[in-house]
Length: 121
Image 1: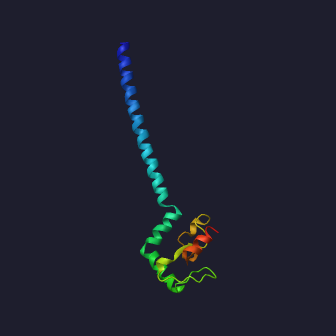
Image 2: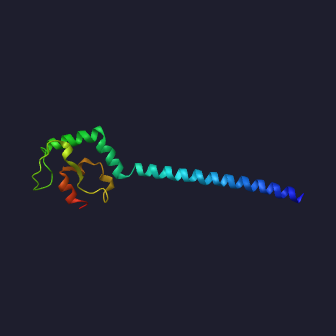
Image 3: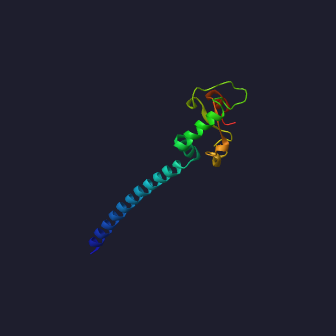
């Protein structure tokens, strides 16, 4: 009788360990999925998707024409042959103003050297 209880307990314990392992595995999968979803919606990724979209490319072309191919940085004489040579700059950085990541009033075109020199200032 005691041996039967030990066997039943052992079987039950094995089922518990299997269920716990499966639960932990499923939980890890959900946590990885949550990280991916959160990462998808970071302000930088939202901006990158907008920049690469048709709307973002149209904005860059229109801004290039408004700026007449010139860098928006005061005193810079750089003139680009096409919009690809200019970079989209955030006047107020994404790091400190994530809500403005795709606000076109916060964007301008700069030449690469000016954009690098500006950094996060």
